[in-house]
Length: 184
Length: 384
Picture (spheres, rainbow over the protein chains, first blue to last red):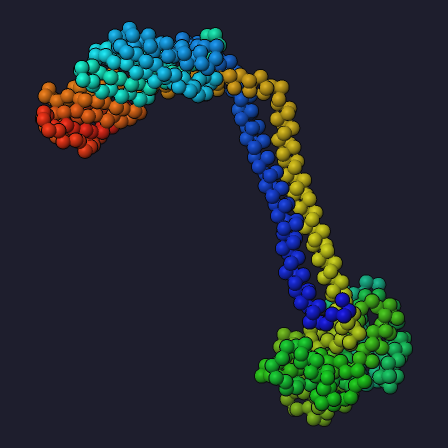
């Protein structure tokens, strides 16, 4: 240092004064602020969980009754759901039910093509089938009425109907039904 | 002894020591006059003040000694300088002291303060004398020494006044002051004091008594200035380090507080765990059941095609018919034939549950009724 001129020493000092805050920020302040943010987030998450748990404890007297009521409603809705030992069996059950409904409604040339099932909330499966058939307007109406009666958890998100040369209706319905694996 | 201040004023060959028993306590002030060898002091012999200062320290037990230097030890005067900073003016005056001051000093020491109109109130002294006074004071027991020009002490005594003549020997210092600060100053012989001026004969004693309160013209020798700068640097460094330590401590305390906050919440959750665990399981079961019931409701709320088809069929005029119906969640594309497609569209718009109908481009058929094509939106999705 003694070999450096006064001007050089001043330049070094100014450089150090400029660099030191940056290093202090990058090396100390920023990591500390980030750590504090993490702690705040942890505290907020823990406080949220604590509040929910306290609310749960306050509500504990009512919970069994609410749970029993929900179980009763689920038991009542259980016959609506298609059952099967696995996903394929659930879809097959839906496909069979749709086919039977179409046949009993009077539709002909029935073809059912299963599609992939997707998981639903509440441990349920959403099974999909595409049903192709031909028939009269009355048969179509009977089939739709059977599907919409509400005794099974099914819906028709998409329906195409057209008329063939013989005057019969050609129908393609995409049917969605809820199922569950295992015994009812 | 409960004395709080000790001060001294020095003239050509005599001095006055003053001390008080309480800060600023004029009633308790005491003074004592003494003589000393001026030539020896000018040569830097501090022993000439030893007796007086030891006595003063004994009676006062004060930490700091205030010294007011009258002529010839200090020579105040007003000089003209271009606009400068105070430190620059002091350097200029110190470098050319022989030009600006009447007495030649061995080690010139200058104090300066700017006055209006490029005038500077300046005062010189000899560093040799200042160092001798400092040595004598420290030898007597004082830990700090502050030396000012006697004129500054007189300005404090005058507070706000004009044309006060302070007489020391055959010399008079004629000054005006405002708020304890000198506004104008002139030195002259005692015989030349203007008739209208207020002459103060006991000027040396007054300087001794007011030296602790003098607000300007402090005379600081080079060695003392260096020592002060060193002390200031040490203090600044210490304060900086203390600031960093405090910052680190604050950060650590804050961090500890943040950790403890999380720990407290976790501890409360842990204390509740035995009660909450079965409740959480029950709630999860409830949530699962409600999700399943909602999913069933959602599936069953898919479009009700029976109602839609009936609504479309009822809207169709007797002489029109559909060729195809294609629908999804909330809309149906219908294609058909009718003698007048406009009537079909009009009636479709009026059909039950229909929100909007938009006609689409239809093929032009060579024979039979005209073809039509329309997109029909159902207001509530056609659900039950």
